[in-house]
Length: 495
Image 1 (cartoon, rainbow, N blue to C red):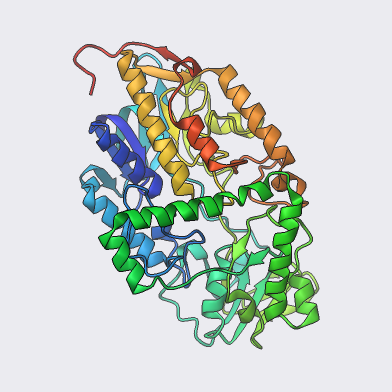
Image 2 (tube, helix red, strand yellow):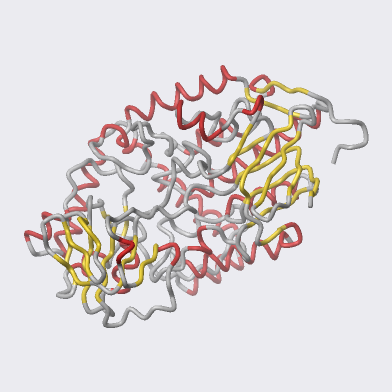
């Protein structure tokens, strides 16, 4: 079956829902949202592991035009964020536009028709003049291929695919990875399990989490006087925004932050050997900086062991580390993050002259303009695309900037009766040169570590290097000169 619309949106997380709202506001209602799952929410639907919560204050990690005065905590837990997204979908009646259970497999540009055909695993096709990818980079679990894992007789799962049916009480558990998810769920499961072996490759820098319950009086105030919540949000924004200075070539500031992190560790970890294991040997910010108040105390428990030797082999009921020590386990849980720089490789996207996006990016490195458009792939937009993730502020701010930019681009094409707009190669090259020049000077490149920010060639294709207000300025208005407009929309067919 084939469905024709003006705009096809992929995904129903913050990005997909936010784009749909901006289309509605612009009066563009001929669109469809494709969602592989049976509910909205994206990463906040999928990640339901114990302890899952936001690491940016929720009053900032939310839509500026859809503030929630009822966040129970400064850093809200996953169920509240999930409920917030479901509430947004309901309020704006977006479910009427969503096709649930539709998994996208690719998109192909038809040069003669000047439109995209989006293919799905069910065989249904969606033909649209414009396609907006709102899938983000945190939706494909990164599961390591441990030697011998096929022999394991116990349970295995990734943190983003939590097995809520399996009772961990009294079990022997191996956790592989010490990233953002692991430091949240390890403290939750440690008191329940008989033994927990935490396999750590690289220790993260961990700062204290300034979390607190939102007082009842503040929640009442935010409800009765909405301007006070906006003021609170603005204060949070600028507080978080200042942190960008340390990431961008100012190591002295990162060293000061390292001192705070070391004192935080020293407060909870008294054992010298354990402290040695947990102390990073790279500059803070090179890898994602984490926040937690209960992770270090959990590692002090008698039933928890931090293993810094890698996994040599998985056996039927145990894990053998590279030091030759065998750890008997009933379950293996992966806290190993997601495919990020290669997140789109599973999609079959072909543009002008049959150009294969995944192959081009694999061969030449990821190239975009503003992280949103790609030369040779007209009318295709990415939300939270390459080099627009953040280490210091809320990505929802970036999503809002991008979704408005997409609407402006569509309006530009419509105003010129153009069927397609394609970013000029020189404009894209100039953006890439500018951004990579900044990234090379930042802590992500100079900090002495490997991280998921970097692609296979060691180039940062993930982070936005600098202040988000600068990105907002760059995306406030589409520059017509940045794009080549082509084709004409037949009279009477514009939607």
